[in-house]
Image (cartoon, rainbow, N blue to C red; front, side):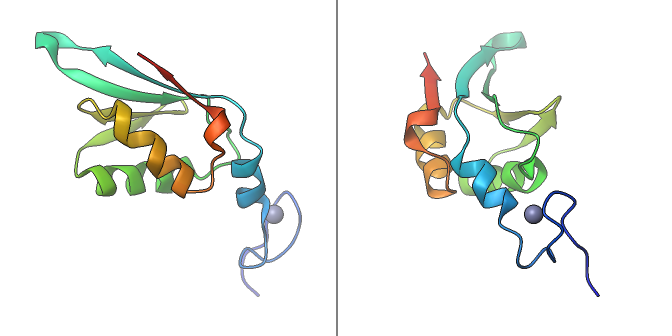
Length: 103
Ligand SMILES: [Zn+2]
């Protein structure tokens, strides 16, 4: 037998908990932080711990062809992707109304 979900007890291939947490996400904040030498980093904050942030970060980095890290539940992407992040998140099942762009 394969792995089962710790929340619903179903085998992982049948579990919808991740999809549900994405749909129920209410407050994702996207903003830019300036680092040393004026370097910009796009921060995605407010994501639920039930979401597989590791694979989401990987997907974002790949889609935007940039580097980034996962730090204390926040995804950091190197560069200013303020306008590109939201469409990717929506495509990944997050509600458009949950995404707040702080410019
Ligand atoms: Zn589950």
